[in-house]
Image (tube, rainbow, N blue to C red; front, side, top):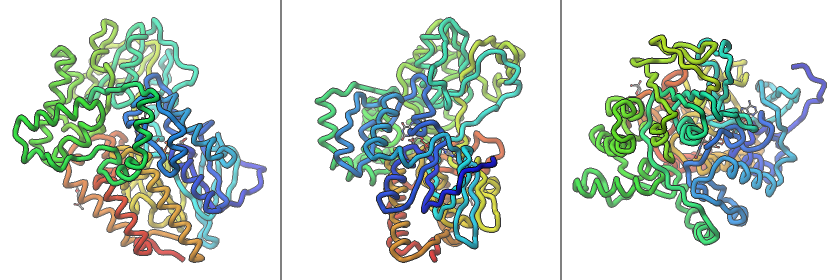
Length: 544
Ligand SMILES: Cc1cc2nc3c(=O)[nH]c(=O)nc-3n(C[C@H](O)[C@H](O)[C@H](O)COP(=O)(O)OP(=O)(O)OC[C@H]3O[C@@H](n4cnc5c(N)ncnc54)[C@H](O)[C@@H]3O)c2cc1C
Ligand SMILES: *[C@@H]1O[C@H](CO)[C@@H](O)[C@H](O)[C@H]1NC(C)=O
């Protein structure tokens, strides 16, 4: 885009104004940098701005999904539910933005389209769709792990005469589904929330289910003043403990009970107790062995599947379509969704579930009247809701024309092999610092505010150190990146995750190089590695 706007000269550009971008902007500004955030959306919130579909909700406890750097900021906000919905989360992010007075330093409706590094000057030139041209020393990406939705995945979508909506850009005025024939494609975490919320409101709902999920029933009590005071009283305890757990949640593996040492009754009791917590505890704090030992994974998977079969009243068709089998994959190797009467929605008379797996009846194409399946059946529809997921981790920056030294394209580099240095930088791209990119704990295996706080704080500390030491340039070394990739892969390979296809492995995007995208060593270990890197003077990077 040509532009008449004068070039803006900055110390740092922050891409994105979600959880990470907001906090990164605040920190760099506090350090005295001339910094500005550029956001594609019309307001702050990121994930919680875009995903405003009915039923969008946390599956992290709200009082954990928090910034802990300021006690008063934490305590002046009161959550009304354990797992609140998108409107409340969005309001909270507005509260954060206003309290920290961030809005004046954010440009909205300004998608970063290109970022080119000039080797001679050691600076980035960044251009946005709003016509901004920025000359900056640092380019800090806070573009999100799950922010690049997959679009146009089906043939014939243009032929469809009804309405197509994506959950990831759901219209804020809503969609009228009363008395309409509605199709939902996708039964991941988002599809599940859509089905359970919208099924009772639709005239008829057809759910096109490819990969069924092991689901856990959420318990979502309302929090009144008493409960709010109770969680706030734990501020210091939560602040200290959460960053060091495996998942960045408050719960952790109980060292006193392992599958290997428990009796069959104790195993059952522990599974039942973690399941009854109605949270992700069943996944991230039941038996750590599920990630490593097939037999244990099978046993826990079967426990969860059994709960699901009972809730589906053992209906053979529904069980076949909606309950994963041990041959599919094990519990926990995909992200585990929490739900609320999701399975019961399929027992309603106006809801039909169709298996569109490869070996069943996959979607062939959209047609004028609806969706045609491989067996020739046409399902007539008025509205299709697509909950078809994201190009995770590498998707955001791959959609920007990022060029490093020698004009090398990041998109092309990641098109060959997805590598990063600790998820914080990339060889060949000096002064590019990243959050929520592959090879760090991310949306898969971490409560994201915990991990994003840690990454942005690490980046701030680095920038501070460089300025104190009079340095202007930082770049990862080949050896540093190699070392991290090998460390990351060896941990991933020891688990069962790489053995299954999922978005964790990039399998949902045709042609995406296969690699476990999220670091599996645990949030606590990752933090320790990052701290060690800083304390040792950043040996995986060169500074000048
Ligand atoms: C439906 C859904 C439910 C989730 N639920 C949970 C949960 O319960 N718990 C949890 O921990 N995590 C959850 N997550 C993960 C969630 O993404 C993170 O918790 C967190 O919100 C990520 O924050 P972020 O700042 O890294 O990225 P985002 O919130 O994705 O923000 C990135 C921002 O960058 C902007 N952007 C991207 N590209 C550009 C560009 N080129 N130029 C300018 N701006 C750009 C985007 O518009 C976006 O606003 C969920 C994700 C989704 C999609
Ligand atoms: C991990 O597994 C992949 C696929 O089997 C293999 O190519 C790679 O070398 C392994 N890496 C490590 C570090 O073990």
